Amino acid sequence: EKGDYKHFMLKEIYEQPAVLAATLEGRLSATRVLPQALGTAAMELLPQVRQVQIIACGTSYHAGMVARYWIERLAGIPCQVEVASEYRYREVVVTEQTLFVTLSQSGETADTLAALRFAKTAGYLASLAICNVPGSSLVRESDLSLMTQAGPEIGVASTKAFTTQLTALLLFTLALRRAGHQQPDQEDPLEAELVQALRGLPRIAEQTLKLDEAIQELSEDFAEKHHALFLGRGSHFPIALEGALKLKEISYIHAEAYPAGELKHGPLALVDKEMPVIAVAPKDDLVDKLKSNLQEVRARGGELYVFADPYTLLEPEEGMKVIHLPEVNEVLAPIIYTLPLQLLSYHVALIKGTDVDQPRNLAKSVTVE
Ligand code: F6R
Image 1 (tube, rainbow, N blue to C red):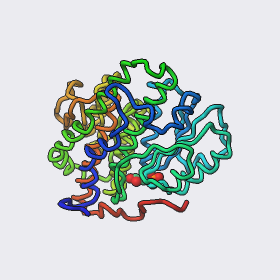
Image 2: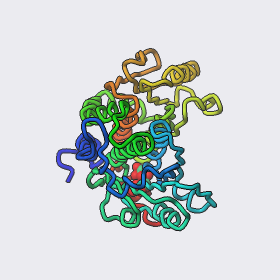
Image 3: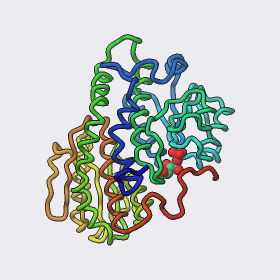
């Protein structure tokens, strides 16, 4: 039931602090991801993994794209990510010792399930499903599973399923890192730092949701617009993609996302005052590069809306609205920077009067191709 909330989507956005905590529950010690977090079978399998292939659709695919940055950076293992509907119809080359990972809220998405069925005949090391529905086809047919604890997601636009997928993917990444690099009982300072940060994640999510009113104010600028451009760099490029997808799905505003470094290779030609540009600017190595990309937008008269870490020193100015997010560990930032984009699309949709929980033409679970 929706309780006091106007829509399931809003309720599900607000459930995120609790479901992030539930997804971490019982899976962490003070300094590490518990070896049994992925099940005992994984303990034997993970040390053999030399490559990871992730397959998913839609929002779940965006989670996979973030995971690629994490897996290559933190576990030092090559990772490929592809949408299921492409992967399943092309001739793929399967490399040795590759773990096949599917991501799905429902566990019933037809293309993802078909990709898994193909993969089982194609010589992968094993299959892992990261999924929100216990007993779903994907979970039943995979060798390993790691459940997200988002609870039922009713709104067609995925919110809490995405951020819990990211959380589970970070646990998986840290387990892979340990399996590849560490003696089983050796301390790993980076793992300890990230585990500490993960424990603080639900609290930071809660603080971030307090920005709701400020975001609602911003949303008024969007309701009359026909297009929007989302920018991010590194692991926040997929977050920009997810922000654009949310806006398209529930407010029917055409939105695109680009890695900010690609602006001058084409999309900059679209920028004028009718094209709001939304950027996510966490504190990381790329923020100075992002800032110069934002200058390129300003110089063309584009209106900027920036979600930024206070440390970036991005401040509101003529043509640029800035909302500061709470400080968060750089690795976990994609999870937190998703939240304002969810709220933004929700408020724009409210103003437009669309059917937030049941957008036109879409179904919650895509069980046909
Ligand atoms: C977007 C959305 C869809 C799903 C996609 C995959 O908000 O919900 O893009 O993410 O249909 O669904 P699952 O994760 O159930 O496989």
